[in-house]
Length: 279
Ligand code: C2E
Ligand code: CA
Ligand code: CA
Ligand code: CA
Image (tube, rainbow, N blue to C red):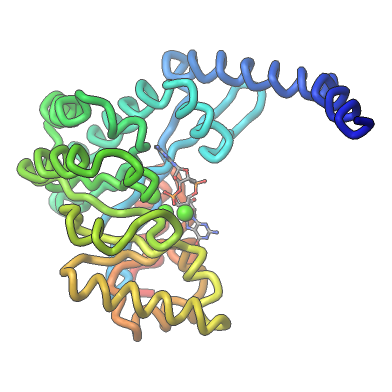
């Protein structure tokens, strides 16, 4: 009874009220962030076996007037809970497609792809396919240069619906990657049924690949699985030459990570990867 009493008191601690207030302040700020042009996209290169740039992943940043740079880990969950992920996600998609159009206008960059992260809540919208096709049409971006990254959390919803939407977009050339592969809910049967193009090996497996035999085995297994299912693989979170060497020797052919470049504004990414090309 004493413990319960203390818990009750705990529940009303002023810090909790402060946390709730801070949260709704952040929510109110996020609500106006798009209109105030506070959201921006960072780009992280994706490179091939020769360390040549083949494309990039767009990663959202929020330049808050008071808090400074807010990372997606701090506001994407809030955006998902409040539904703000829908306007935010549309802004990301639209802005990424505008970049694809700029790349498409130059011979040196016209084949580059852009990967966009899409939340389960966004993908579940009944008009998701129409929204993406609308953005592609409005901007004039090439659908076959756009890749949508989905996470395994999506697989908790109706799989037939997921397959239907993916198939509709794939008919226009849009590609699909399964992000953070190996960390979530996916079963091998889903992997066979979903019309995926690519798996992304989660950085948690790459981190200790040289020191942890289990992680090394998992990475090799994912590569073998992808090979037999005819899926491409990108290894995420490559930070060292040693990790890259292991991944290459294991048959991985696409890479992303701080070893090549941290996420950066597009101009900085293009300048930086030029210098790193051929690493
Ligand atoms: P993610 O899609 O798995 O993105 C990769 C994250 O790993 C990024 O964090 C990136 O900065 C970080 N990273 C890249 N290379 C390395 C490396 O070599 N070492 C380490 N330690 N980290 C590396 P970031 O930008 O903070 O994004 C975190 C997550 O937020 C993303 O994980 C993604 O799930 C989500 N996110 C980002 N942008 C968007 C967006 O536009 N929409 C949605 N729905 N989610 C987004
Ligand atoms: Ca991603
Ligand atoms: Ca990932
Ligand atoms: Ca991750």
